[in-house]
Length: 369
Image (tube, rainbow, N blue to C red):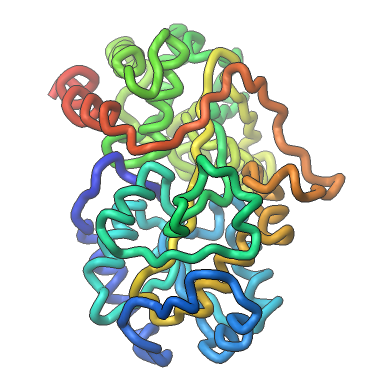
């Protein structure tokens, strides 16, 4: 499933195939240059629009259509500026794979932009694969959600939730402790927190519920250990397909992905999105521009669009919380779930201690490997 790993991993065989398959597409478009962008590209200016239109293409990694309404976002951007978009083939790249791809292809670049978990922001800078750029909305982005030099900035966030099929689950769970009840035996789907930010952040959310925090994730690890031991979670990975087919009746995921499933399934099956009452985390995703972007102006124009009123409203339509929420007016048809902020923990930073603990203890403690 899309999104970031808790440690940088090598490109998977699947990702390598994706890069090979898309090289032909990229070769049919003019590559501008492979050098670091000029200083004039580090800040928004109106001249970017014409140059982006001349490039005619922007290529995104890790930005699939079913994620936070990105499909409509891509379409709206293309219609607004007359620029082609390419994002489908690499949509399910994890953040690790996105950054590794930027690095691997620097002499023959394909991707222009990426969308990564906020914990990967510092990693991206350290790897030297992202370019600084401050869009025209920069001053309205909270300081804790952006790199001061412009290397990355969060555009939206979601909250860890329970996606529930009420036909399979008669008693809807409302807390992390509820998931330990025997009636949920074999019904829960969950992935690998060593590989995806979605699951990594879920371990942190569970840790808060049982007395821990982002620096002390052992309570969360102990929770999933018990969940596995009692058979409520058998190791099955949650996914849209698993929910659709009834392989699982509950998956732990971002609220906007649950809402996307609900819209896609159209009642077959019905989906209920539950934000756990005892604790959740808000996980921001940050936008990055490939230092070697083959379409550097189009990359910056897209970045600017993602933070514009239109872009921010588009995220909200997909159930995500835009970072510029207080500066925009949402349509009356858009309703974001109300949050009890006392139980919502915003995540930022590198999570070095949490990453080390999960990497060391997940397999032996939770999986018994």
